[in-house]
Length: 329
Image 1 (spheres, rainbow, N blue to C red):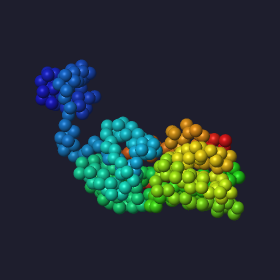
Image 2: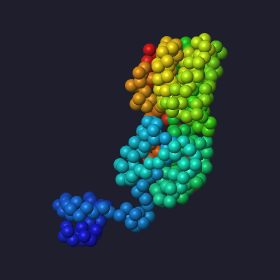
Image 3: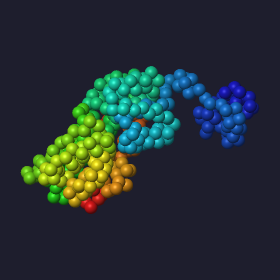
Image 4: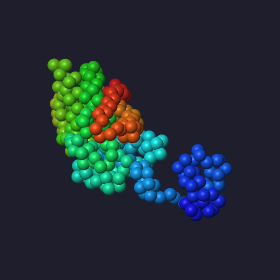
């Protein structure tokens, strides 16, 4: 900063004002100081500034899998909102493993981030939150995690599962299959529960469950292979996939096998309404929830968070139904 001040012919205090309070400096002085910064290649020491201010300008974000476009949208929403607040985002993936999630949280604590936003992997978000109390505000993303230890934002997954099943039932489908139910994922369990709620109102309908080892395209393809091995009369006439990646895998396998017509023989609906859903070979019906909205709301909640003793906030949005050719072709 002294080098910049000498090059611009101003005091060190003026350089500091240009960097931190530019509105307090005349435009001509700002231009002169910025020119010196550009010529010298000056980059301020954020670690030193953090020590001086006593607060980090970085937020930690942990998501289960950045290969899933939905969580990429969460990251995008969080990053955009943080940027507006003059903050930066450190993004880490837990790769769907609780042990890696714990390691990422520990790294963020070591870096003394301002707060943490996390879409947890397992069924113990409270444990994850208690492990990170040293990292300031902590916001859970993705499900209705209404617990007293931290703030949370999510969508009503039970409602989403119900409207998916109701849509299929209104189309006259009665042999429903829910694909993708890995253990310990509350959001998926809630979606299945919502589907069961809808089927319970129709005595002539059933909802079968097929678990997948992963909520991926490959997981969906494996599930579809199992379905195709059944006799035609024992196959479902409608499928609810736990997310759009599973649904896209199911769709790929069914179309490649050329034994089943979608939606004539089997109607198919996904969940999340990622961008790829609308551009699939058969455009995919889906339950829409905005990852960007979750990410931006989580950052807002983190920045607005009160003391640890204050009541926690729990924001729950309602998803919507998007109908395309895979159910209404």
